[in-house]
Amino acid sequence: MRGFGSKRQQQHQTAYLYLPPLHFYSAITNNLLVVASLLTSPVSTEPKCYIDTGICTVTLQEDNFRSNLLYAPLGIIFTLTWIILAYEFFALAHVYLNPLIILLLGGFPIYKGTELITDKFIFTDSKVAYGPCPSCNAENRVYFGDILGVEGFKDTANVKCSNCKIQFNVQRNSLRASTLPK
Ligand SMILES: [Zn+2]
Image (cartoon, rainbow, N blue to C red; front, side, top):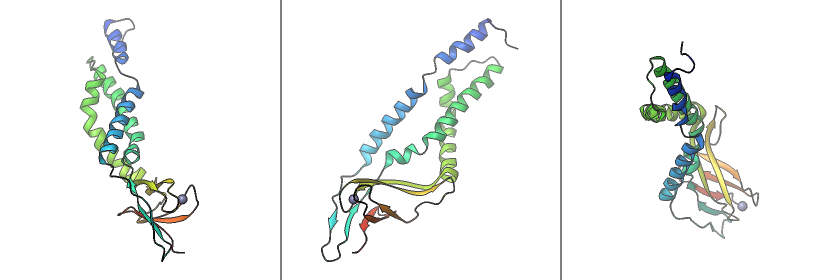
């Protein structure tokens, strides 16, 4: 039993105060993700229409920011659980580790575990793409893959533009979007 007011108990309590709030971590990771997506996103492409077939096409881009964001829910849960459990575990042996050191120790397994479980059970075969509607140029977003076992788009996504309501297909591999022949 740990007595109230003992020196160790005070250390135990104050160590928590050094843990920055959650939004501190998410602000850092969000900024890194934005920088990463800016560095990797290619130049935007313009829609092209062919008069003979009436088909308009454009190539979308992968949304790296949102693709990475899919890992955030589980990553945050794992990180917080690990910090609290590891802290309490070491505290039983009267070792009061700085939560940041605990975070560093668990960082790699948490990253790998989050990736594995998210890819296998939550967002399977996920890919997020964005780009202009081939017909009206309005920005659209497409999600490929399954969510919690509910089947989504596989190789081809059938999308309805949020602006002009035209139907178009997006190929998963090439991210090529094209309207249906008229
Ligand atoms: Zn449109």
